Length: 246
Picture 1: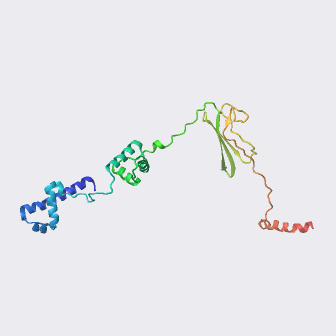
Picture 2: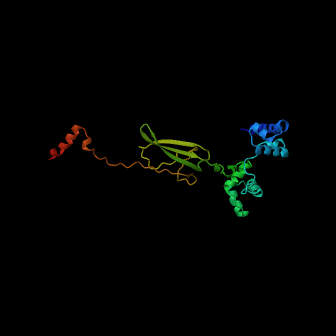
């Protein structure tokens, strides 16, 4: 129910209670008959009449149902201090609680501080100021001064390949090369860079971040298959071979 709907409901109840008082003054002039006619108690009638005499028509509306006195409520000066700290330092509830304990010798729980901020409709703390910004790229103007080299293992058409990639940080020029695994690759450096230069470690003015050291897989002697896995004729021939030698 919205605020306007609640206000209309309170106004309707106040006018209905005002009719009870008018019925007593204009018709019956008897409290018992009036209460019996409207089905209310005499205590409630006298309460409505006293509130109408003191406050008028707004006094016949429903008041707050909570207690009028809260013994454990936060003092107004502490609430004002919490709002001031939040406005000046942009602290969260937990840090505000620590700040009050350290510099003001006052303890207020973080949950209570959160409810105070929510009651006063204080917006959330923006986290953008605490986030690190994007890293700035180094200012490089000489091609080949710094090269990013990467290698990736690929499987294409049942074969294994190595994809070598080199990126020049100055010109952002990219070179890629695809080599099969069967080639006898002992040591591979980045592909040629623009301008005819290559990332050769013998040149001191050219620095490569990563060097790729590749070696072909070691060839292992293949063991003969088990006789149970051979076809029937080969299995018989292998079984007869010791007799032939003898």
